[in-house]
Image 1 (cartoon, rainbow, N blue to C red):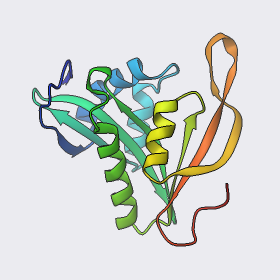
Image 2 (cartoon, rainbow, N blue to C red):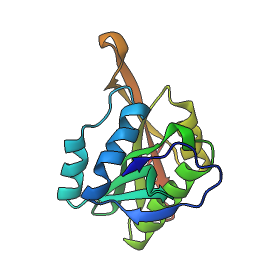
Image 3 (tube, helix red, strand yellow):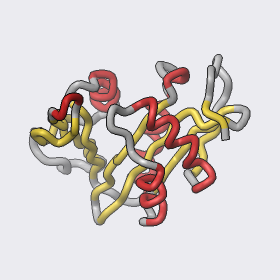
Length: 166
């Protein structure tokens, strides 16, 4: 399975992630994160029954993915990334909207996520989709030079009166 080189406005298909997609998903992860998940982490998520989604362009080429879990009334967005050459085209928002729709269908009350404080594009995406700051996890993420970076815990309430305070 190929990694997208350039979409050029080409249509994409939203598909459930399978083991068939993991090589391409892991490749996107490697170029998107400073401390990427391993292939095994994606396999473990699928084995645990978490939901995974891919956007696939012609080729077929995976251009974006998301992984989320559902436990009781909470959905948790664990990972979302778009291939560098496919960014700024609305694919992350399309995947995020799908995760929110699936969480509502599963009767989740809210969706939670952690995001690096330094990832301004992602923080903006989540805020535009209705997420708000819930908490800060100090030193949550590994960073360059052996340092640690804070995570912002964000929440999107799917039902009135749910979500927690900021």
